[in-house]
Amino acid sequence: MPDTKGLVIVNTGNGKGKTTAALGLALRAWGQGLRVLVVQFIKGNWKYGELKAAEKLGPDFVIRQLGEGFVKHAKANANADHQSAAQTALAIARAEIASGGWDLIILDEINYAVKFGLVTVSECLELIGLKSGQMHLVFTGRDARPELIDCADLVTEMRAVKHPYQQGVKAQKGIEF
Ligand code: ATP
Ligand code: MG
Image (cartoon, rainbow, N blue to C red; front, top):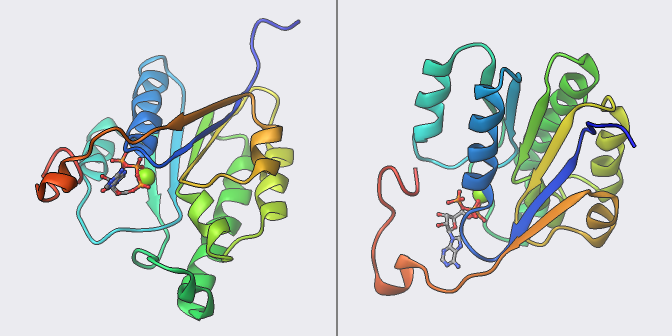
């Protein structure tokens, strides 16, 4: 067995922490000199703290936001803008994975893009085929498809136990964005 292996990692489940865990991993990897790219498939409306952090961390920690607003329900299926934004994100993900220029790529919320029919599961699996043997690839978002889980080396399901939204606490800076 080789000492190192580029992993396919999936962070899924209904609990909070899928994206934050991926970013924690990204920070750890960057600290070890790995080149990190985050491709956001579904973009929120907030200015994320991680965007500011990435600017400070420099060229080996890059976040590319490519989604077109938050897709809330399956009706977005019919939305050509979402479709084309997700397909643009996919095309960029393909090129970046194949470029060999990154050691860790996070495909943030790509599982939602699949769930809402903006990207097919086959397109997702094809991305894995493009990566080098040493590159780590992370897929985040609820409802990861079983086909993806089958192909992965490391799968974590966040389970919701409590969430401050249930107490009516609003999204807070530094916690949610
Ligand atoms: P985070 O980016 O905070 O790590 P996440 O990636 O696990 O969250 P997403 O599915 O991307 O979660 O959802 C984004 C939003 O949904 C976040 O604002 C998050 O706090 C919220 N959320 C996640 N889990 C729950 C939950 N169990 N109840 C209510 N809101 C939730
Ligand atoms: Mg997330």
